[in-house]
Length: 202
Ligand code: GAR
Image (cartoon, rainbow, N blue to C red; front, side, top):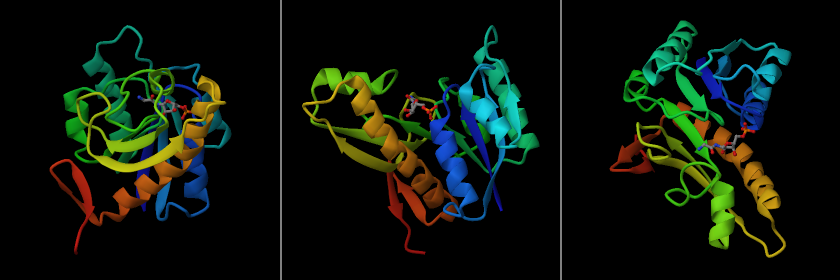
């Protein structure tokens, strides 16, 4: 049984999609061991409580990055977390944090990286005028939205779109992509060659 640790800062819809796939066996042999939010007012942490999950708030406000990261890592280790899933966790992790879970931290980003990293990726893509965008699940390293890519899903940008309809179309794919990526990583049948995640021959 693998222990997942979810980190979030807001709405938590990716967390819910993961939780549902864990509950239905679509992500086999796993459980959500802890949900951590850096914000007490995150809707996602309320949802975690309602679902009877172990939900912890570790406020980041007013703390140095490493100090906060140490508290979060302590909570993850206490709960014997095998895989850390950032799900709308709006903080950059320190190198120290990343080193505590080598190739064991995933993030989801609402664009086809390396296009449009950072905040408001959907709005950035819309404003740029791309005809195709999507989402990316990737390993986390100490650079923003940067580590090796696990899964990408594309969505078209329609003439009739505004930022909201586009973001909603991307979000639907995020909810599929994240669980797919978790399955791949937990299965472990891959290797990383340079930046490329490829199926291993084992
Ligand atoms: C998602 O769109 C996720 O891709 C994005 O925040 C949203 C969180 O929604 N993450 C980033 O932009 C990270 N750079 P959710 O709380 O409903 O899962």
